[in-house]
Amino acid sequence: ALGWMWLRMAAAAGGTPLEHVKNATARFFSEQLLCGTDLLLRRIHAGSTVIDSIPPDELCRYPA
Image 1: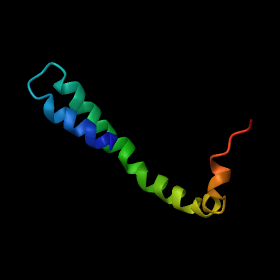
Image 2 (image 1 turned 90 degrees about the vertical axis):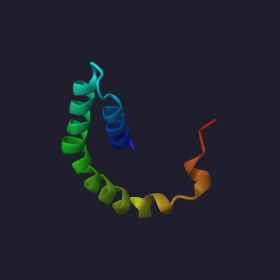
Image 3 (image 1 turned 120 degrees about the vertical axis):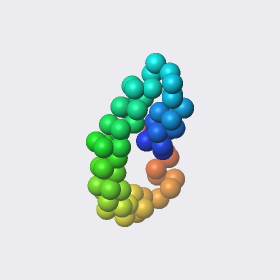
């Protein structure tokens, strides 16, 4: 979602002084950060059985 928003902001910045900065930021995000999302997704799925084994009432309980 963050990458999509940067792309939208870069597109909307056309003709403004910040156009170059927003384009560069969107490009950095897509080239450097977006490529790591596959690894993050695999890590989330790999640990899901541990989280799924905890009863829901235990996940939301706070010490008194």
